[in-house]
Image 1 (tube, helix red, strand yellow):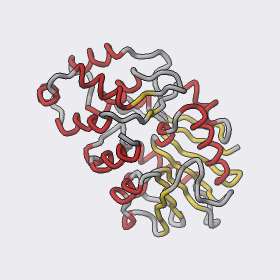
Image 2 (cartoon, rainbow, N blue to C red; image 1 turned 90 degrees about the vertical axis):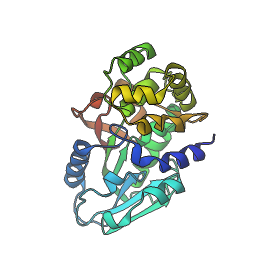
Image 3 (cartoon, rainbow, N blue to C red; image 1 turned 90 degrees about the horizontal axis):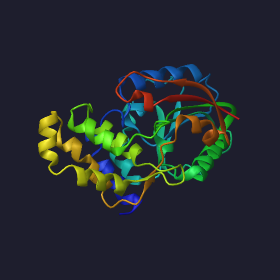
Length: 273
């Protein structure tokens, strides 16, 4: 399946995706606080969002915010963009994050929730970081939640052992732990089809497992959008982030929230260099 087809299916089941893959209330409170703190005065500059994450679009923005959301998938934009809940000045456009359709220095702030994990390889991270720094004003900032894998790799066996022991809180944590356990280095990342294959091989009856764990079977089956998908996600170690972002940013602060798997979902405050 093509990357475009994967995102078409992902958009169709977005309502079934939960925390930590989607930002929760604690994440949004932090994003809102940081956006208001770093948003600055009404100087005509924009606030850039990578993707069209509904929770971020709908949060309370500074009154003067000019929100521009850029997503590569027109289907995601059509499915998730809800202008009535956005700031007064807000629009979404289709575009590639490595070649943004924006003038240099035209943005004050860039926000992203898991977006950079869609970049393939170090070169992909570097290209996007450099492009984001280009469109930001020199004193601009980034606010980004990034999913990171553990410094010491977690074996797949440990993920499935915890799963069957009822120690994994929800299907979305299971998907992310399994994807990170299958991850190679930053050049390899993890192929989504491999995540589905590993899950399919180990779980004979998803309906029975969901019932036993008290999960929604529909949420567990959201992993089916990974079937036959060659797209790769990359989950860096936290110790790799500074190098991956260095072409355009330096890390000012790292915020870690206390929800389940929150230690692997840090929110970074970045300074454009």
